[in-house]
Image (cartoon, rainbow, N blue to C red):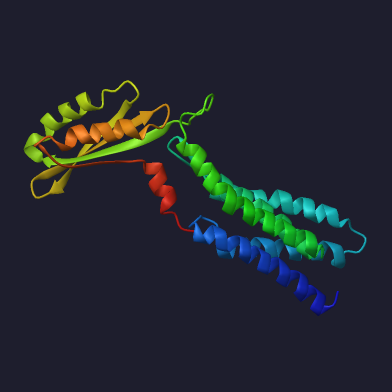
Length: 238
């Protein structure tokens, strides 16, 4: 194989990997710009190795091994946090990027370009649609995954027991299940109480109502709620 031909194929694979990786990096996903570029480049190199270094070998076997091997990378970005699983889309993007690189290595450049555009379009256009569907709770027959909430309250340390009792009464909604309650010093004579709650389906209005009821109590200095899994995903870095 000529050096110019090699550089052209591998260069195309790298550029397409960078294009896909830019979208992942922009969303601060675990596998971003460098990972996608390397996956695409490596797939092209392996396919070229199988096709040109061993003339009597079947190059499709190399492509099949790429599909299998990329699964190890994909498994590394899938994580279970509480009741939620994150990283599935990033793993699927890695798998698709390997296919783009393999197409470029085989010099099916039209197919490689089209595939990269399709992967980018799927990530860019389907993400807002998925978020809209997640926010809609009134669609008939729609199932909603369970969710874990964290309710954080700050109060004076001499009011710890009273506020604990208040919290138990406030989160007594049948849609919520109390899973944990922990206290820790917050400094300056205050204590932070962290209450773990779970719900069969996401319903932020229940938490907003609880926070509203707690905020007007004079014994409480600060109160807020969050979803730990969402915070972990939002601030994850590649």
